[in-house]
Image (cartoon, rainbow, N blue to C red):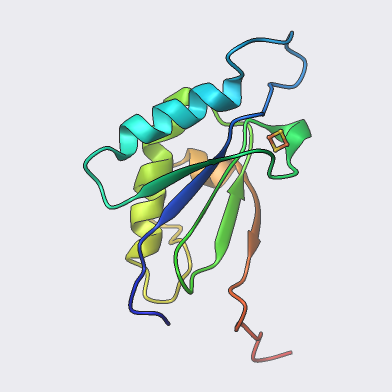
Length: 126
Ligand code: FES
């Protein structure tokens, strides 16, 4: 595991909300702005990007640290910005690189779309 484990949260700025009329700014952009505000003064870096390929279940965001698993979330709202930052801090503190279930903000349980292992991960018992 790398010694540098600064967490990064990626927020898709192009996400729309399924079933809602076109709106500007897009819900994804609003989530990005809220997440940046929530990260202010923390060690969490927020990066904007275009599309996490989770468009039908947006607004979408992902988080990871060096050596950690990567977590993708969907169906988010601006009120979840603080939870994203809280989760990223939890992930950064997890020595096994896995976002702990205990203490994880509820929305990061319900809104989880997928998790992807770090590149050097091998399931040892398969
Ligand atoms: S537009 Fe946000 S995941 Fe594709």
